[in-house]
Image 1 (tube, rainbow, N blue to C red):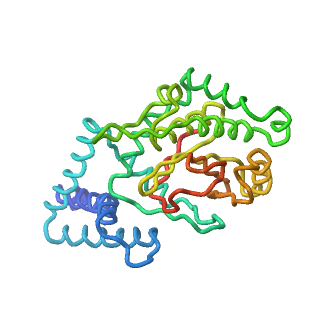
Image 2: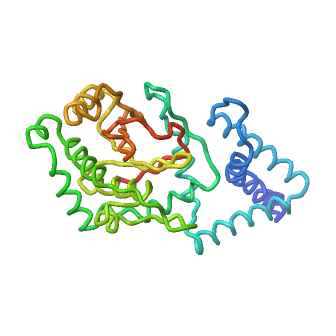
Length: 297
């Protein structure tokens, strides 16, 4: 009992605790800078980085307990500094890796997989900060344009997805692509974009997602290698035939025999609402995905 109460015992416990919790952020860094071998699955790649981080933590602790403690406080200090001055938090990193592990492999066209890329998790906080689904002006914009197209007969037949499709048609038909300011990645808030109906892909994605959420829908923003777009939840995988029929009924000229592109997550059906597609569920501009930004209901 006396031995258990010794200060050295508590010190050893503290070192062991640090040794464990430092593994995940170290694995994140390893996955950024060590590319996967060949066609290795990215989830497997991250697990191998996790094993490497664990081994590294054990080795550093064996060499010097002070060194592992110093690494711990350096990482904590980095997160505190970034949270205070750069709006970059651990939550963003968690969201990105949570998205990476989401099951999105059931697309019938086998077009997507996720991989982590240095810096993408910081975009999560910026996108979430730009979202305005509860702003009165965004709500008014969404209500007005969700009823602009497709008469009530379609609403009775297909339900609320008719409203989402009306928003898609209005925003996409009127959207004009305009680059960000030189040397700056500018995220336009929806209250600005809805008046201009102009901007780049992230401005469009944020406006589309905010508008869909403003009328009770569920949306998320997807980041790909050089692009950003919105996906909208339109039901479950069991509703695929119904959703496909709705798209082909409301966008017959645009679909013209084309395929419906989607992702499935936990049984939910998410449809591509990108402006590069001429209809909801149109082809993905970039099949490869880096992260998925989800929003609370």
